Length: 471
Image (cartoon, rainbow, N blue to C red; front, side):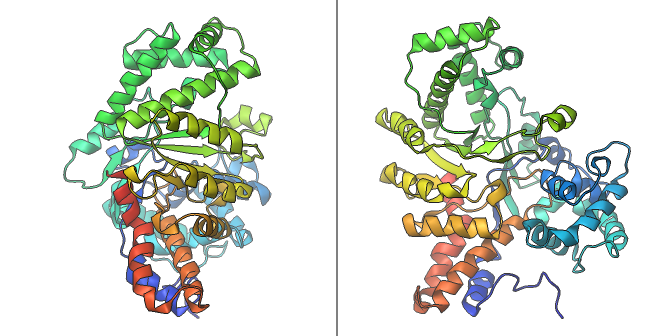
């Protein structure tokens, strides 16, 4: 019996296999949205063991381990070793069948380390020792893994107040050959719902911009200075994490009054918060347009649901879920506000609730502009809870029937791990399997398989992103 992860994994037809092996497999990776730690790339971090690179910060695995009944001390505890945590992960893996973690785990073992065995309690020590030994060699450093996976460009996620010192260090190293570019993530600059934290953030932002942020106009001045700095370091994208889109009517005087209220220590009401966030999104959109950037919107998550665990562990620790926000009218109004001013930048929209697939797929068609080339407004790849086989197929299906799949900019990792690059392979296999099945079923012409491979598979895998972002 062949290894579970073999050359034809997920490729169920001859047409799918031809599309993948002839047109997808050799494409480089542009990972235009991720959460890598920039210092790890700058310093070419060396990981000590497989538990460290795999389990630190990976809330996908943490959620599965908790569901499997693993005690928290073996997940995020400080009194347990990397091996002990890994051993508990290995106990969990056999029970992740049907979860994408089962596919990702074995893809990463095979593509990074050449390990074809299934991970379970009986193989855990052998796999841990072999992979950990490899990780301690130069070829398996942070940069080594990026080269191994044929990565061309990565875009990290960075706050406007960040120094970007690590990006500058990587850019200065001409021998490395892989671009690490920052992405502008200004969520904290609009988070007026917590006046104490907001005031603290304004102090940090003001120091970075060398501006005393004592007024709303000075806030915009500081943000514009940092936006210009990010651009000078190679930034070409922004990213916004939203529950829903904000598109309330407001006046400049109202926003000034809300800002003054917040920095005075008073909590704004819900209507004021919505107005302020609406104004900030418009200001950010104008900055991005004028800089020639692409703006990204990730919306629909309910974060930090478990108060007890949030107090214990903080955010991004595996206690978030899909929300059911009503967004169509506000999304449309927001984009229309920018479009009427001639200030709508290239845009990518990511939904977390799969019920919104058709909503987003039709919304993007309202604001396309041939002056920007193909696909100015993009329906982003399956995100977070949706970056698995079913979620990817649904996103591709909705985009295919309601838009132009051929103009899609493709996959990203959205990950903190240097072992997550096989998610691009996973996506490409699913894409090829979908198209290959349609060819075999007579829904697409078999005579056009080379066109499909060249103009859809190769470009969705790499070429469209290369042209769209112009890194």
